[in-house]
Length: 480
Figure 1 (cartoon, helix red, strand yellow):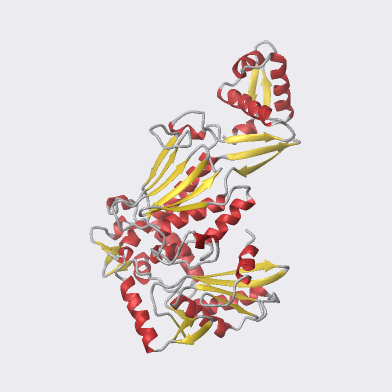
Figure 2 (tube, one colour; figure 1 turned 30 degrees about the vertical axis):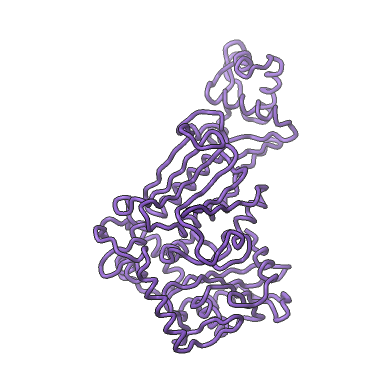
């Protein structure tokens, strides 16, 4: 995805507590700034911008970023979520470094603690250090760091832990990890020989046994309101990573794809803003308030929109208005967020809502709407809908999700052609008269439709003229 819009947005702001521009890659100076961000409110450093905010760019940006990344990851302690990327903006490469506010303060670079005051990075004084340590102690009492006495290592998916370790070692190349348990201890997910709530949510094979509020539910309603009738209903009750994959796979089916046919060439595109939906789901997982048996994460798909709701409100200091611009990312569950970041489920820090807005815009959807209720939070995607509001129930969402768009043909005929394909798919070897009866059209009109579908290489007539019928071409069947 082109993230140049993020640079544009940041250039519209002035340097401050969460933002600094740097003209060149001065590793020590940048490490101090990033350390101060982690100890304060998080923030962004853009390298390749001079004091007048002129974009001068960075030569050999990839090589310089590699060296800078190694320095920051190895020198800033304890380990912190820092994202790095090169963005081409106005034909020049700039480096964007982003970080959250850390949950294991104080952080230090070469044994010195730095903090941020407005647009200045400074060495912390005694009072600052005392405050940082107090924040760390308070964080240790957070729900996700409490231990689950009944849960044991055998209850965890060793496969998911090993996947995480592989990616962790790619990031921290000098890390020494003895085994899976050692990794969990090093990352704070095992404390005093007990698994934390975060550990169970992230890695347990069946977290529901220990945390009843852990599942994700997806319900597909035929109309625009909730009710007793639905097209699909899934309760996802595995660990966070498996639930995310299951949810995205199911939503991919529910929203479906459109196949465009031009001169026998077919291209597929998703019927929904993939990145925006993924970001919204990750936001709900990471920011959800799990500290209640009433906690939930519900995805409702309607005939005209999709809503993703979760238990928990915006953190203090953040408003819905802030979500439409660069804002401080205050994490409710920093340990879960850190591991999701390591697993690359969170690609960038602090710009998720802006990326959602941008992705919706690129794909022709309206800007998402956010609503805050009593202990709940919801994001609404208008126009992101399932494909078959008038068809079957239950798991019938698998049917009719692939809609083919024939270029230069009006919408009504396009729909009828898709109806014909559906009839042939479900009732192979029908003849022209039988198909005409099913679509309620005359024989000559139906013949024209069948001729077009044959020309597009979608169907074929099998058998003798008086006894044979139409079937889908083999390549179309493979798209089922």
